[in-house]
Image 1 (tube, rainbow, N blue to C red):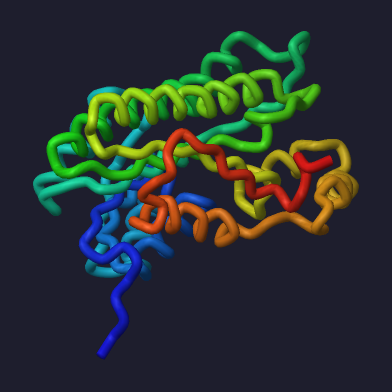
Image 2 (cartoon, rainbow, N blue to C red):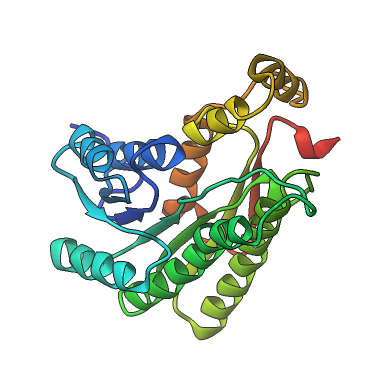
Length: 256
């Protein structure tokens, strides 16, 4: 007899799931019994992620900044699986720049993906879940949504916005009686393509990597599964009394 998975019977949609944290979350949720809709703007990598998961997954192209893409992806999810129980708003970008050097174009791009994309996801997720017995929305923020960085003006702003948007969505859904929970996850530096690109963009990548690792009390940069396991918990019924909360996965960075 096989043991039941923690997410048996649930349907999850994950944005930015072609790689990094999104892919890890999709894989771990599928291992726990969820059927997963992998979404991204990277068609080849997205299809590859869905193929890795197997028959319980499918890929849908989704640019999180486009309302029409959200509508299409949600329609495809409901047609394929009949319901949506979990939404993971993971897609994000980072552009380095302080308040003097950052261009308005870069500011708008970061907010379009990191904050507008989460707003659209929450709106469409609530609509899909509220008539089906509720669900769980997990928004990926960052430790940069809690503490500032001198060269992360747009990223700080967008991730701080995700933190408080999450609480607003949680309170709205609770008061409306929808049975929908909404929580935010705040990782520090995790070994993903986004962090690697940020390191490589520095003047001395190796020095930058060592510097980042030294900032983390537990030592070293985190792994995608460190975040994915938290997402599985928030997606599961184990967290049924948890909403409007923020979960910090930072090796002790914000404890200092």
